[in-house]
Length: 140
Image (tube, rainbow, N blue to C red; front, side):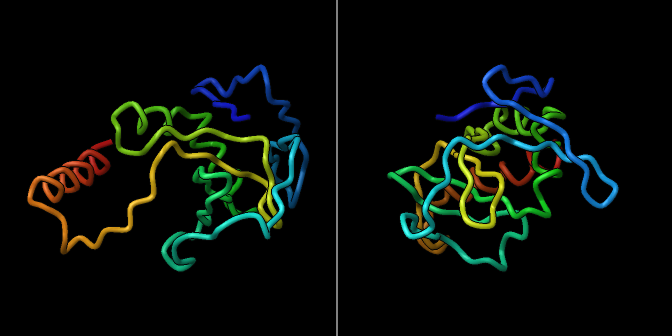
């Protein structure tokens, strides 16, 4: 089950409590399911993303958010930035799940297919679309 937090930060299905850690207030999500780390396939390279680690579980793609990036990530949802990026099709549909895994307190699901195609094999239209997305992201 996944839940989407809209720009207002409201979600009737998810309980978010506050707790204090090192002088800051962080939203605390109440997970309903912990994914067994041996049941996932980790994808990608750690050094390319310092916020999350991508994995495949039950034929779906997820982002496990590092604990130090949880507040930042939730604020992207609450501020409406994620909704705006999805609306402009800069990123795929992304939702907050009720999962946790190992040392990751927050897990996002992305509606996407994993494509591992070297850019050298892209046709000109694919390169043009990618360049447009980079410009859209810069202008967002």
